[in-house]
Length: 464
Image (cartoon, rainbow, N blue to C red; front, side, top):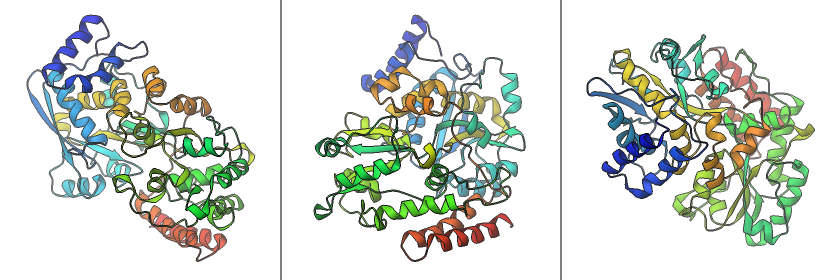
């Protein structure tokens, strides 16, 4: 993208001509003109196509939705990418998810030109599909593109998108895991509870704060945790010094004293600490039809919950419909021994049809560049792009929240590794361990028996 005055002005004129409107362009203009703004990941404006080209890209559901990643990418392609390159992008919703839809398309010999690459969501099948030749490696395209700079991308996500030493996708969005604590400032201030933004306190201190915020007679609760794998489960294991899988992806490692302590602590938020009345309660009547701890939080009956930084975009936007109070955002407190759980997570885009690889490559660079990585937070797409220059962007930190920079500083080595089974049976593995873990979280078995059965069930999958 151009960074001189004439280039920016030209781009804005083109976008206005497309009818984007002042409201839709304000964020783009600020990102382009701000001192911390960066160019495309290729170091300059995407090269115009010699002739009109159309590409079809499979994406997660939601192209026509008012929010979400796919609606944002669709809008940006129409307003910016196509006018600049002559490449028309048709984004296709995946039903029931990207993994299953792409597998069906491959079997029928009708692959799209590019596709969403899922690793922890959307079917979690990206790596398996890459191993089967459905995705095409990007390494040669990267080598040929002298202006493309791969250094800003999160290494942990590039590792997750690599199979047998070859890279198959670039990250559209990414984060460091489910360690972001959201809290109701009205409730914390009213109870005299201070939440340190950097998470520099212990889980014991955190539970004491949650108890102060709990008013069981009014059905108001201090904290309600989530626990399912892959994301929450790995967070809890690493928070307590345990691990999910070995690096080779052939052995489960969580059936240890530390692993049992992790999930016992989660269960004890109800059974012992009583900061939530029912880990499995059903929430009704919440704004936007939300359920679970997010729904209870939106109703003003839950003081704290933790998940990824994706909700910063929703809670901090000026016209949010989800909450009617000011949300505070902080890192989750330290676990035993000062540990902090972290795991890389996110999704990417890759090439599936080499016939139009040049056009797809231009789109991959565009959809994963710095500008899109920043603007998607403002455009309803949730988590920022998977690049360090995005997470340190001045506009993002000022107009949404400094939590992004706090996370970067807290984990200078980057996010924890995202580990996968060697046989690519990730979805089956997650189901096997979650089925047994959920039985424990309903109080129907002990943590010792649960982790033993989780290991047995998961090992069956790993040996397939």
